[in-house]
Image (cartoon, rainbow, N blue to C red; front, side):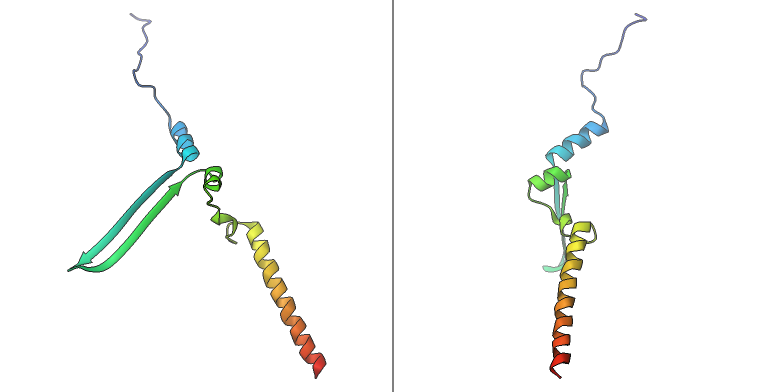
Length: 101
């Protein structure tokens, strides 16, 4: 009896395993909050939350962070390039006006 081991019927999963499953498959949490007074909407909030890995999100067609200049250096560079082109065009127009005078 001293060497007996306790065996559990349910296999325990740790937090890392659960997180890996959630990120691999993705999970959506959705909810609405609506406050009314006498059939008049005072407040209407829609909450949508998606938890997934970057790979899974890309697979689903979600990639908004790639175009956000605060989150992506590539998007920031693109934004700067567009601004630079616009400024060069403006400068060319101003130089043409000066030459025409």
